[in-house]
Length: 312
Image 1 (tube, rainbow, N blue to C red):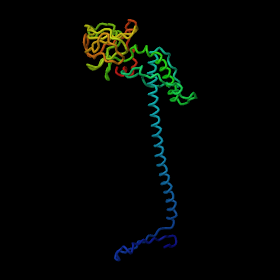
Image 2: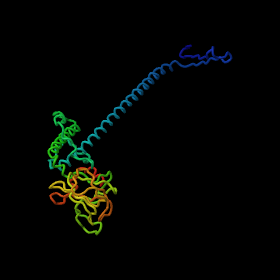
Image 3: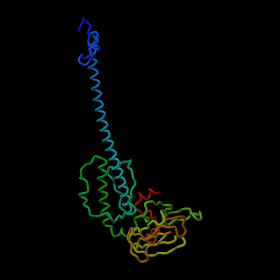
Image 4: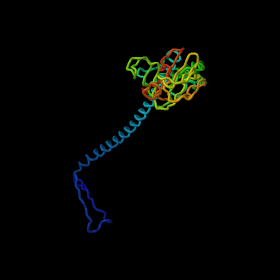
């Protein structure tokens, strides 16, 4: 019902469902201008609702994209770290083999990682059967720094493998691994001058003292022949291995000797057990390396430096 500038709305209950006595009519009278303002308000409300729904959708899509980007960046960071670790390992091996330092293409200033192989691994187990032409990425310009590192790393690996394949026989008799076959070991005393734990005086230590669990396996660090076994009041039960005319190694303070003089051994063979015999403050192996009869720093002949330095 419309009267001049007023609009009257009649609201009544459903006569079919309502009882006769409860039947009622509600009369509402409103000015016309209310409807003139109400329609724009409704349209504005619809616009806000639509815009809000669109914003929510965009936010969800943006969160999804951000998550994918973060995942990709984390994956790239992980790959970059692994690449740098392998590069460090190869640097140690190249230095050990007397090879020139490799010029890494695309190396970042803030590279990460250290390098090394596991104590049980034999560098001679790396198969020289490979095809550099299939391993090297296509010879095209690469703009991605990560791909530069991967490409350069592959070239580095190929060069090291070629050198290793040429030196296989020589490397069989060169000490290259840790003598302690244990998951948890540490170096209590390195090669060089130190204060004696018994006299307090300054003395030169001609080996590495590698500590670990009593009874841990002690392995030969290269192929060779057991030259001598025995017991000494200073280094206790010991084993000396002659690897070739250049290299020999000695393992002291052993709990048990598992080999006899004249026995041929290979790198990784168990030759004794870690103990504390002789002049010792605890369970460890006194490991010495001799080159042409001169005792040298065994650390320079340990390729698994990553595992080694992580326990210091």
